[in-house]
Amino acid sequence: GTSKLEDRFAKDFLDKLGLVYETQYKAESIGRYYDFYLPASNTIIEVDGDYYHSYGLLYEQMSPMQKKNKRVDEQKDKWARERGINLIRIWEHDINKNPSKVLSMLKEKLSEYSLKYQKEQEKKQRPKKP
Image (cartoon, rainbow, N blue to C red):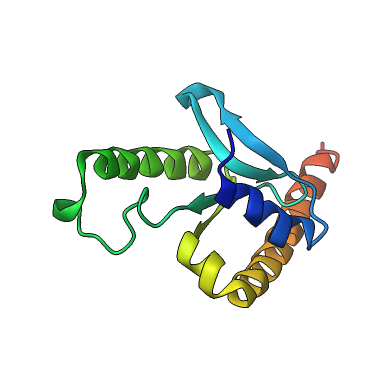
């Protein structure tokens, strides 16, 4: 399910920007879920809690749970990359302390990704030359 942080992020950022999104987007082949998928820009957004995703810690300083989460995050990053899906990770402390920075970053990246995705879709729809 979605966390309180994810719910707040959706309301304060995605809804504010008027974006269409899916929550708990499933990557079937690895049995993992992503926080949000935005079909118009072919983008996944992961909202990373500072403790759960070990913000600022070296690997040696992480708890076993944090080390496992780090490996899962790397697996999820790789899955998205291999499928040409854009991935944005946003830290909890940025959502809480720098909301205007997060909002402007989202606008910029999603605008760029939407244009890129539209061009890719247009290329796929062009008839092949004989």
